[in-house]
Length: 355
Image 1 (cartoon, rainbow, N blue to C red):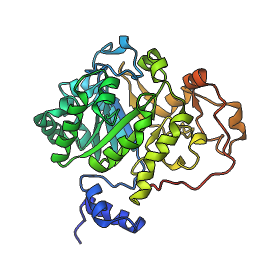
Image 2 (spheres, rainbow, N blue to C red):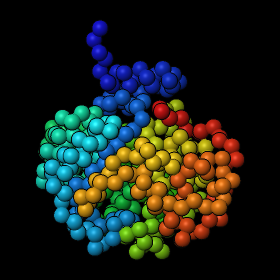
Image 3 (cartoon, rainbow, N blue to C red):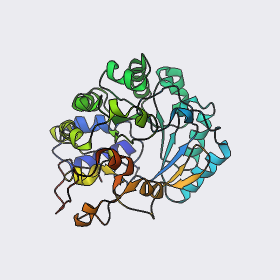
Image 4 (tube, rainbow, N blue to C red):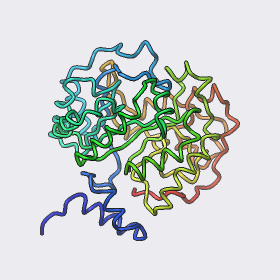
């Protein structure tokens, strides 16, 4: 009996699990996905440079860190990817800086695919991908997932936040190029005071107009550039939450599940009915995935994140307090602790997920 293509298996899985969703809508959503969508994400994340061609106002790197480290040797990158694969990672995330500035980026993707990674993604600002021939080169090298950051629902907001005039137009062209190549597109957005009010408009544009399934909606880390632009960009999680909820309603409206844990750096006590889509909130030392840093050192991601957070006294009264990682240290220093209320009982999730 012939093995069904991955897209067909993904379609049948979604149709079985979410029968009320429109069949043609499901087929459109999964047509470019080349991996089983119901598998738990295990990621080997590799930082291939520290240079960047944007100067984002919210970047967690400080200005003096841009290009401060030499590019890691390609053999070190290969070893990290190989070790990650041996430990069960099946997603290779190639990050920076801006990884597209690395001249041998195609070789890294080719190695990752040969090593057995089913999903090889580049996390990029999209500027160089506005060139269709460059996107073709990346796809032919082995990249099959393109995480292209969109930090605003229009050019005015996006260009201001990335500090680059014309960037939004190039990002839209990049996404069009990737989709023409039949590849999957994901996106990242860092929430802050300049864009959170328009999150519903952004999400509708990204989900419906651009057909994006995979998201990292990141509550900003108050480090690096973000700390330098604190007064213009800071916003409490509680104030941003209402707009995030409003945007996520689109998933229930179309009766489709979330394809990934999309809320990053959000504590579960402020999103108690969206806990299934909060990423990395659990205190989990053992299964932390590897991360190659710009200085060439490899760390366990779970260990690193545990050190960046702090548990509050109120956590002792929370039903998930023993397994929750806690709150970013810088956040507590800036906003205090008054908004955090313990979860008495786990709630039903308002957004369905595939996992």
